[in-house]
Length: 584
Image (cartoon, rainbow, N blue to C red; front, side, top):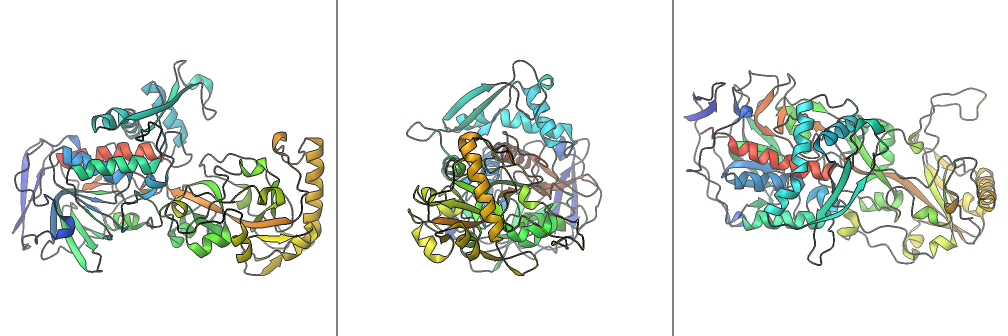
């Protein structure tokens, strides 16, 4: 027999017996040595409001309960990124035993490990709350969630310092962000930015932030099982409580982990799931022309697991884009090989370069700052107007595929790609310093004249047809652009005159680009306690989902974006899970 213990609305214990037999958990293997996983005498901490009466039975597919458990911990954390590591530390420090399951074979830190590592706070707190509400643009109507998130982010520096971390406050900027009307915030509005301090005293990136947090988890003896992807949440079919997790170990064998208090689902988004990208992103067919720059282990596993236990989803169409990548290189390597000019094309367009579609036409101001934001992009424009008198007499994405056209000046300026994303940091591919290797591979096309270059560009459009560049159109575009450079004014797209550099030095080059996702934000809805919400708007007992998985950012990316939200709400999830009474 096993006993499920919960708190009723008045805080009293309520026990229910099950006729299911359970066998004691197996011994812990050497690869998770140091784990205090079977926590028999942990201090009982009274649950708060989130631990009140168990919700009524809701829709969802309940898992079959295992005959025995292979491992046990009070709190099981799925995913070892920013949210997961903070949840693990917080739960441990609240007196609970913790076990972390991580899909990746090494402690990469998920997307936290490839982030810039900067966290913003808006002060005062009332302005922060206003700012976040506006940035969500009515995609989040839970004011208590927004308030709790803002408070948790505001307290992040204090918590990090309590763990022994040193912070670098990059600057305090005053003035209202362009996303807000001036009269929406107080005159005292400021935007402190902080990062973890590296040993040399400088501000660290996301990889440094995660390294610090991971060292905190290791010093606490929190075990992490790598190459152990979670596959299914184990749910009581009657109470809908989450009792544990089915995962596969590094040999592919199913293992069952009991979570005596709760499960924190912190497995990130679905950026490396082509089916989900096609079905959920706002310009679905365009997803075939995308790549991603973050961890390849974010394949939406947590979304599926949450759905199977009845979770309500939100923000599934939210992606963040701030980079272009070489399409050919990214497809071959399997991860975004990002152009050196991060945040759009700002760095590239200080050199002689433009972007054109297959008709040889410019279609955007190349010198732009994406700011991670999603929404309508020039390259994703879909033309549904057609006419029998028009040469384009069918629906189409006229700006896909698209190319950067540049000359020898840019080719000689250094490598075209950045090493700052996942592919670069993990050396999935090391781009040559003079771009010659990639030229030989055919990832870059070269010619002595613009007309010859246009004749060499061939590609497949959305319909799979092999199409060529409009040579005449390209030649005209380059000629017009060079004239704009001479005049110091771009009448077509109002590009910054300082960036108007003529494309005149042979040989000339072309590289096909594609949109490169930073991450996705969709997933299960959560409340102010980080509890996962079901289709009826009720918390799923003993399940939490912080971080990028179901992020609050459903429309725009804020300066107080994914990283601080993940760290702050991961901490909240760990604290709240640790407060629950053990179900057995």
